[in-house]
Image (cartoon, rainbow, N blue to C red; front, side, top):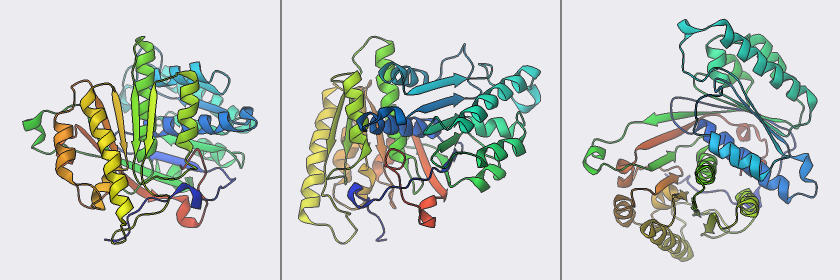
Length: 378
C-alpha cells in the first residue's frame, strides 16, 4: 500500500470553528488524548500575544475525590504550571458501579457536573472544554440525553469540546465532528515468554495517537513532581522535520515551569515521505533518530520515552526491526516506552507491548474539508 506518510506542519491551514470530538472504546488512550490536546493548547496559548485567550476547563465525571486516578498527577502539574489558564471540576463517587447500583447521589453528582458544563459552554470564556467520562454517564442514563445534545449544539462557534469514555451513545456520535474509537488488542502469546512491562503502543488510522503520547508524558512529569523526584521524559519524533508543530510550544511551556524535565528531538525532512519515494536523507534521518533513542533507552536516565511515529518509519522500511526489538527487550525495568503511529504490517516488537490500543477512525471533520487546528490537531 502506498498511502502512508506524515503530513508536515507547514502545509496546514488553520480553522476558526471549533469541533465536537468523541473518544470512546475499550482501549487505553481516551483521557490521555484529551490531556494531550490540553497541553498543546496551553503551550500555544502561552506563546501567543494574548495568553488569556486560551482557557481550559477539565470537567471529570465519575471521578470523585477519595480515589487516585492516572490523570490526577498530570492535572496537578498543569494547574501548578499554568495556574490561571486551567480549571478543573470533579463529580461523582470514587468507586466503580454498574447500572443496577445507581443511587440518587450518582444522579445528583451527574446533574451538578452538567450544570457546570452548561454554564461553561454558554459563557464563551473557554477555548477547550474536556468532558471526561461523559460517555458512560450518558450510557448509564444519569443525564437526560436530549438535554445534553441540545446544550452541545448551542456551543459558541470557536469552542472545542472533547467527550471521552466508553460507550458513547449514537445520538452523541451523530452530532460529533470527530469520532475515534480506542480498540484494545490483547498481547501476543509470546508476551508471556518475555515478560515485558511498561511498553505501550498506540496505532491505527484514527486521531489520538501522538496526542495520547503527549498526555502520557504529562502524566509522567506529574508523577515525578508529586513524589519530589526527577522524572525525566524524552520525546523523540520521526518524520516530523521542519517547524510549525505545536508540540514545540507545549514542551517550551513545560520547560519554563519545570526546567530540564523534558528533552525533545525531531528527525526527518520537512516533507511527506511516501512509500516508494523514500530519499537517501530519509534513511539517514531515521537512523540518526534511532541512535538517539537507543542510547536513551539503554541509559536508564529517562523514566518515560516517547517514540512518536516510529511505527510508520519502520513500515516505510527506513529502519530495520531487529535492533528496535532488541533495545525494547533490554529496556530498564523502570523505563516506560510509548510508541505511536499507524502501520499496515505490525513489526515483531508489537509482541512485546503490555498495552496495544488501536485508534479506529469512524468520523473526522477533515474528510469534510475542514482545516486542522494548531493545538488541537497537531
